[in-house]
Image (cartoon, rainbow, N blue to C red; front, top):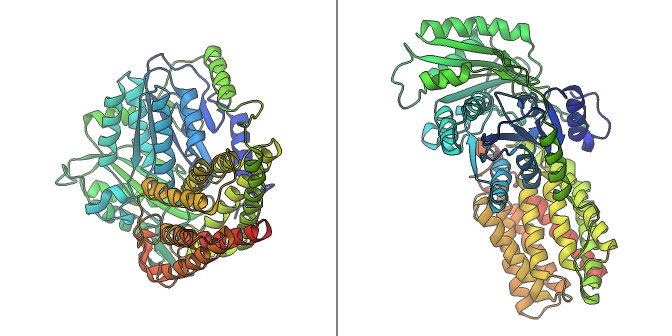
Amino acid sequence: MTRLFNDPAAFADEALEGFTAAHRRWVRPVTGGVVRATATPAGQVAVVIGGGSGHYPAFSGLVGRGLAHGAAVGNVFASPSARQIHSVATAAHAGGGVLLMYGNYAGDVLHFGQAAERLAADGVETRTFAVADDISSAGPEESAKRRGIAGDLPVFKAAAAAAEQGLPLEEVLRVAERAGARTRSFGIAFSGCTLPGADHPLFTVPEARMAVGLGIHGEPGIGEEALPTADEAARLLVETLLKELPEDVADPAGQRAAVILNGLGSVKYEELFVVYRRVAALLGDAGVEIVDPEVGELVTSFDMAGISLTLTWLDDRLEELWRAPADTPAYRKGALDAAEPDPDRASATAAAQDTAVPAAPVVPAASDASRRAADTVLAALDAVARVVDAHADELGRIDAVAGDGDHGIGMQRGSTAAHRAAADAHGLGAGAGTVLTRAADAWADKAGGTSGALWGTILRSLGTVIGDRDAPDAARVAEGVTEASAAVRRLGGAEVGDKTMVDVLVPFADALTAATAEDLPLADAWDRAATTATAAAAGTADLLPRRGRARPHAEKSLGTPDAGAHSLALITRAVHGALLDHH
């Protein structure tokens, strides 16, 4: 378990602060993460990686020459927000465009995609690539749905080494695609991990058993087997990966592979070496030539007791890039000439940060009626934060049935930050729309992950429709909720029946629209729609998830409602209480 922390909510920020203080030779802090402390040649493609905290040395530990130019760092097990990613990429950009790289998780896909759009709007040519190497999370026919685990490292490194060679953005992207297509990983675990401040792990494994095919966010494995010996574990890992070769590799014999035996947090180096001796022998028996193997903690999951094996099947080009030198806080290979800090880039980074976050918040002009409506908005957001806080443990337990168990924590971070930002804007005289949009940005920034992106979208859509000109009537609020429903579906791609929050949001929006069309007062219309939302959330217990981290464990979730759907239903009922108090 994680024993040393202050406020659990501040853990990720404080860890990053300490990391940068310890590694000033390599990295410099910027809003949202870190960038290289050394100069990048003008015109070089910037490879910017990122993901949640809790996986060190991924992602901040991989920033330096020969590897990433910057890393956006999210909260614990939550993707960084689009604003954080945009900030890091802006600081890292050297004129050659940006390649954003991350593990294939819904929250990362959403936030990095949004950041790419913002960078493009700034005139920065940007591409994205999601690593999807975990063979246990989807079959070969659905490889694009696989999550990214320790295969992040060889794929990141291939792209970054290509960038160091001065290749243009499209060619760097093609290298990433080639490396990703030839990388496979598989993992096992003997116990789950415990987040800072939590009193129990995200999942447990029965004594004398192991979980097979687990994720790196505390997701349970796809099955259980008897606890193996080290040699038996090695055989399981190797044989599983050799069953699925890249399309252009017919036989492992005569092939070269980069090999990573990765410790997930509590399996220490001597144990890893015992396993690796057998891994190397088995690969040798299969005719595989091992190239520059890595054995150690490279992509972790706090204190999870587990290991994973990654194979990247090399061709001449990929081998050259895998062997290329790198110098980062946590990963070093070969030798590079000494580099000096670039004061000009440091100044530019500081200037970019200054322009990214206004020194003195200014709110748009608003009518008196809109400012009065903002009182109700603030009360509603306070009710949201309180109901989430009261149910955070419950939401975590629901999420842990088939996911990673962090939904309650993420919702707490997001709703608390949203209420605080709304209160600040309200104190400056903002109208209802601005209060909502400020809350939206804060929720997305602090929560990260899928829920952060979606709740940021919900509040921003509602705020945009409501605006600051006058007090919104019931029909306008219903219009805003309907737009939020459509925006969430556009962004996340989910539809009713996928076992997500959409299963509640769509019927809630429809019921609210129908009730307001009957000229019901907003509080009464919201009450009817909230009742519909509660029923819809309960109904998700009968669905199998088709999206998100719960998808690989679909059967486990039968009989349990979706955590996002349940939290949305709780929120709609809490907001009704605020509307009654302020009608």
